[in-house]
Image (cartoon, rainbow, N blue to C red):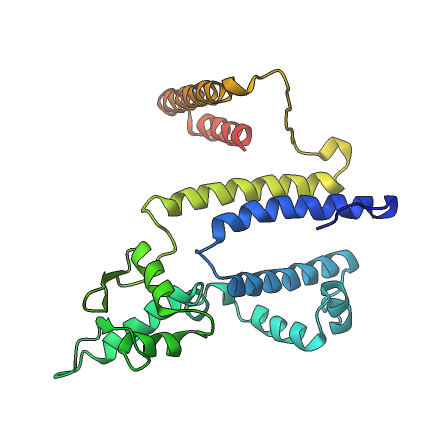
Length: 282
């Protein structure tokens, strides 16, 4: 990251530091839930897609020249062509072949489930429990077949699978048993809802920033952050608690008003009120 910068590079340094500040906190959440390899693949896919849309929108053209796309992305033309092909395949980022390999653990569980399905034939051995400890044991063979295991030990993978609740580990018998029908990157049942709500809010904020960068002054959306040095450090937790109580009370009041409107108002009035409240919240 930039250290001491000369004046001509000051604005670039501000941009890179701002990006790092956002990405560092974002990646902190993603570590262990999606591999760096798959995150890079997603970013490449989205970057090329958005670059194409931007050029088409600004130049009002139907097809973006390959050389121009390579220039703006910094990728070689062969890589851009490969990504373009994936973009044309609708839903690439959410296909099973992509999702099952979000992390090394998910790829292993997916391969393990296939192994169990094949072994369900009569007189076949149960493959839900595998031994580990040497290169010829079932779990070691499974790991080598599912992922590029260079630098990755079976013990580290077992620890991750145990932490996620995917397997039961018997260290005395040196066995692991698969106990889930799929691998989940979440460590608790309410995490998916928390992630969805948080990233939706982040997405809305970034959309506001995106609009405000190019919009005329009269068309800018409300975007504000308030700083104060008058709040003593020892009162921060108390302030957060009181603010949470206040926001929760406002939410209850809003819900009460909606219920009264739904009871006493016409359909048109309820719809109008709902739009107004949603706009306020957003």
